[in-house]
Image: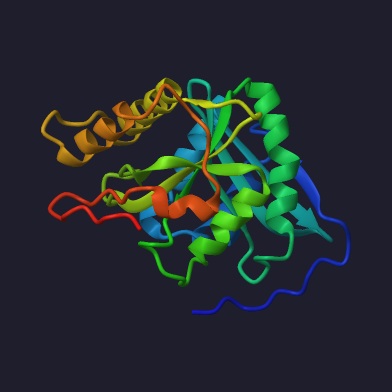
Length: 249
C-alpha cells in the first residue's frame, strides 16, 4: 500500500536525542508512528526491548521534529567497538525529503564521540533478494547510506531472530561508516557473535546457517576497505539453509 503523502515541514528540522528520564512517552509514540509502519515485523524489536536498552544506556534514540510534528526516528545499539544503527526511518510519506539525512548527520557523530565506537554498522536489505515494496526501495536505501559515508562489507549477512516468534531475515548486507581506516575483521566477527548470542540466546553447534556465516567471516582478510554500492555484484549471496548458493555476477 502506498503511504499517504504528508505535507513537508514549513520550519527547520530539529534533531533531538531522547532522554531515558524524560522521553519514554515520546519513544513509544515514535515507535508506533514511525518504526512500526517502516519495517517488516520480523525485523523490528518490540518497544519493550528497545525501552530496556534505552533505560540502561546501551540503546540510543533520537528523533527529527518540525513544527511540533514527529518526522523521523533513529535507534542505535552499542556493542564492543561497534555502534549498530538498528533502525532509522522517516515518517511514511516523507521518505526522500531530507528527514533521514538530517536525522543521521545530526545523531551519528554525537553517538560515536560519546560511545567511542570504532565503526557504525547498518543492516540493509540486499536489492538482489528484496524487491521494491511496502517498506521501501532497497537499492535507493543503499545509495542513501553511501551518501552518508557508508560502504558495503564484502560478504552477505542475515539478521538473527530478534524475538522468539520471529524468523531470521535472510538476504541482508552490512554497511559500515568508518573514519577512513580499514575495517578490522576481528571487530566485525566479535560483533556478529555478540549480536547473535544476545538476540537468540546462543546458537547451536549444529546450526548450518550460522556456521556458514562464521566461516565466511573467517575467510575475510584481517582488514578490508568498504566497497561502493556499484560493487554490490562482487558480494556473494549466502543461501538460507536448504537452498543452493547463488553465483555472483
